Length: 118
Image (cartoon, helix red, strand yellow):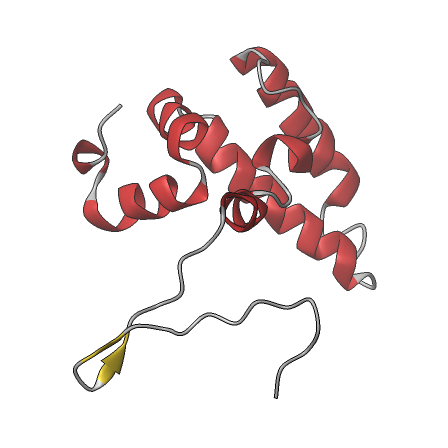
């Protein structure tokens, strides 16, 4: 069945497996867009390490689970801020994150930082 105005593409089949569909540039960038680590701490991308540390400590004082044990969203934001500082507080991990995003940080954590070119 064809729908008017929609182009249908056949997917190439290689052996018993199908090749994955190629993503457009818009789909690739939309996967990278999300809550960035800088947004979770509330700092700009070019912030200094002192500003990042100050923002982290401020977030910890506001969102600590002992203060907000009844609010699961606050606890989730607390864990996001801790994760953001664990990456942005370390200069090498921050450089990897700025260049490759979350995927680069995951590779650096599993395989080691020396395997990710900076």
